[in-house]
Image 1: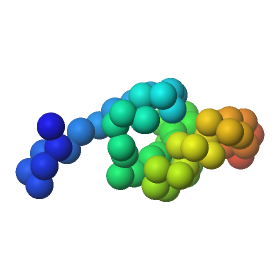
Image 2 (image 1 turned 90 degrees about the vertical axis):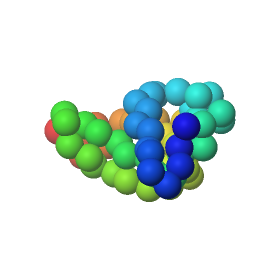
Image 3 (image 1 turned 120 degrees about the vertical axis):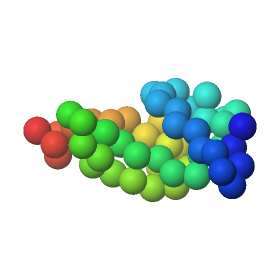
Image 4 (image 1 turned 45 degrees about the horizontal axis):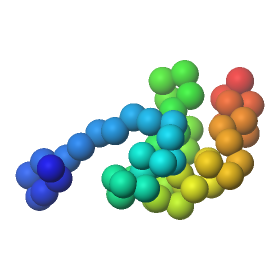
Length: 59
């Protein structure tokens, strides 16, 4: 579905989905704001460590 003229936005909390859809960028949103951005490795970090540090930082 993705090509040079089309993109795709997927919103998920599930790493398993990202095993099938290889993302270019990952963004962590808290209260409607992007608090962290990165590549596919960020999804793996979130799976390992969770979202707590981002939630606490935004509080």
